[in-house]
Image (cartoon, rainbow, N blue to C red; front, side):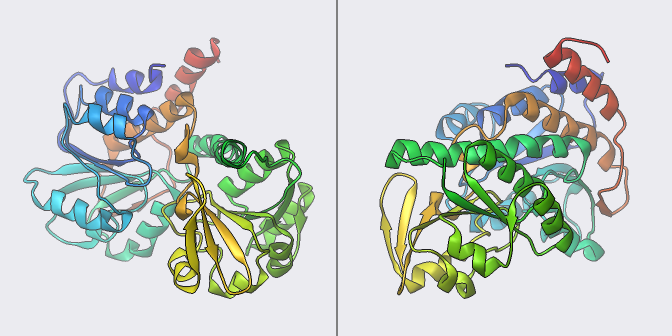
Length: 362
């Protein structure tokens, strides 16, 4: 499927805009299409793939035309990006997904023309250093298009876990008691997708307004410790650590821990592994035997939705088009974090999407 909205935005350029582009991305089939399309207009100086999501076939194909680095561990991402940027001599725009440039953006004298960040996790990392930013950073985390994406992400997360249960254990989500930790955009989407899959859904959030919202959406809510004891599956969707060592005594033995977040942040995996015996039980599942119970870590604690199609190509098209619109304006802004805005051309892109994918004019 072609990325119609990306092509629509690119077609507006008569000459290439100034500056190069460094892309930090999940190397999936939709990203491959995006890279090839924007290379018609922008000069891609390097691509950095995120280790836990990079697909080998995509890397292999893109390497024939572009410089690509995929660190062995996600912990090496920032050092990798710093090394690449330090070798550049011309101002470079950066497309970031996860805040991997947040620390670098506080360093003076870097050849950074501007940064576009796509994720909530990345937004929070840039927000943490906002006062020290030396370059303009435009966050797409709360834009209209990302709200649309969240609907698809929840479905993808639940689909991937149910597929693992069915293919690797001959089991299913239907009828299981499932706790969603975090009821933001992704957590809300996951909760609804779980209910549609036939699970018995519980929700916990540290924000009282979200707990009230979840209650009136028909989900069971209560103290975290009580819900953990009842859960056969826990989905971490908070964007921060949602289960740490202090929670272990409340976990039901045999509970599945599933990340619907970013990186490897929802569960304190490093501590769990020091406290228990680790054993791989299938392709996607790892059992950690603790003193009084055992937990089953799904996908080693990394986000699960990248095991399959993370989001439909049509949604990816919108996100990538929005990213291009952001690239067009970020370079003229002074240093700082920009999150409350309306991009010039966004309405036209949304209308083009309706023409392309729904076949009618609005």
